[in-house]
Length: 168
Image 1 (cartoon, rainbow, N blue to C red):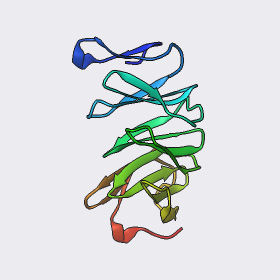
Image 2: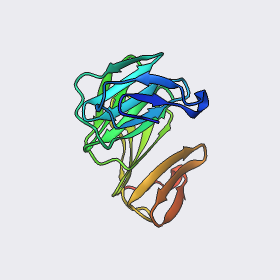
Image 3: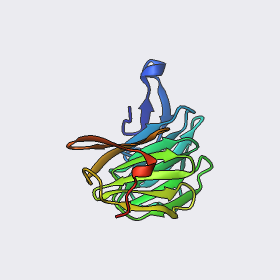
Image 4: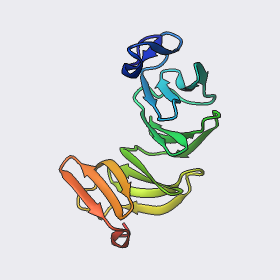
């Protein structure tokens, strides 16, 4: 739980696990490795082993969506998707409204309100152009499974095998 100046965990009986400057961050996500990504009016910060380090050169991301995918943090908000490595390196990847994200090897599958696309997880280079000819283009969540891709929408879910990817 994120409070004004600290966060707590049910796993540690409500004991404070970290402290942050009051009022700077409104969202947090915790990875299995114990790292924490915070977002808010002050931008992004990463916390690990009791130390909180603001990430330089980040815009305020008050309503960011946060993901830990394999080896890095990803944050989407204010029309941008960024990668934050554990050492604090910050890489802007795409400028668009992101609604869902999943990782498939070195590729990020990015859900949008107009379909989905694939980008390189390190550089942001487009690997699969926007796929808009799908059953419901307004995607709300993405899951990459070994046999294909699952997409959640406000109207249900659909599945696409790799051979079913259609050009827009």
